[in-house]
Length: 169
Image (cartoon, rainbow, N blue to C red; front, top):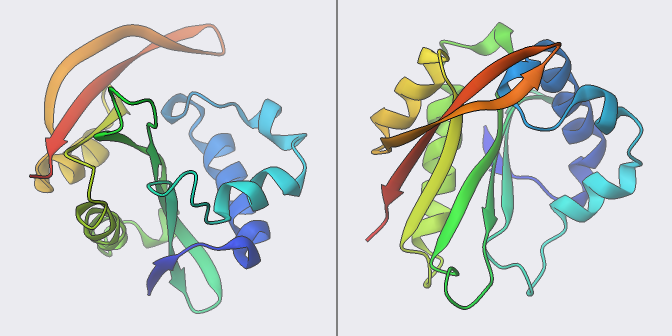
């Protein structure tokens, strides 16, 4: 089941986020070490709906009572760029990969984005070489527009990020 994550889900969200950061440090610009010390209040704030940030949302995929996948949308709110938002924080637990969890999360996010009247376009970055994630995004209409070389440094190794974009309207 996929549903919008709300403040009541903050502990499960924070735990899954930390797992993703620990198991796949190359996939995120945030680091496990930095996030580990953040209080639960940060996750609570991120999952609290706000009229000031109407396009910001996180969705979670649940297997029973266990959160097994997350995907978020972060809007931009300056006048000249409020028509765009960024897909962020994607992680699906390895034990449910191949079960269409990522597809279900992306469908929920796109349904939400289409209902945000000002949004015209979504963007994201994916780690170069993460073919499963890039294929997921391509299935949902995202196209590559560039590569940011050496975007992240993980344990002394530089990793490129592929930039992708999708029009909504």
